[in-house]
Length: 117
Image (tube, rainbow, N blue to C red; front, top):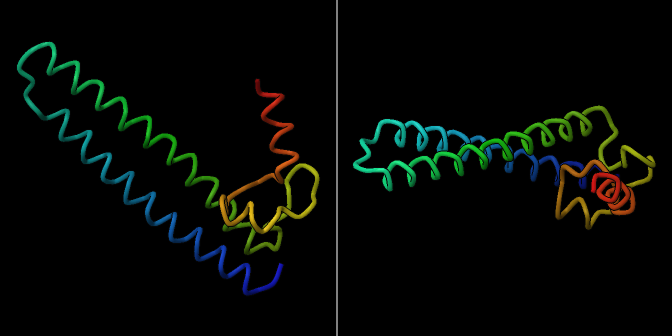
């Protein structure tokens, strides 16, 4: 992969990383606010509880994405970025544009998804 491509993907990953950290911080503040809100009745309590669960699920998913982004950034530094972890072939540029933290090429990703079903 060319240096200009690596810089492009590094920039995408760093920008996404900043956005995720902001989202997680915002969600944490929202959850804290929900915990401090006085709820009037059971319907209010159920609504607050539901909102809290949704915020926590989103934060957990984004935390997993953050780990994948950090792994991809380390691969850029070590020289292994853009190579499938399974077959060791190059991951297509188009796939990396859609998911810059992809660990697998399309073929290997499909194999993994079928195995996980």
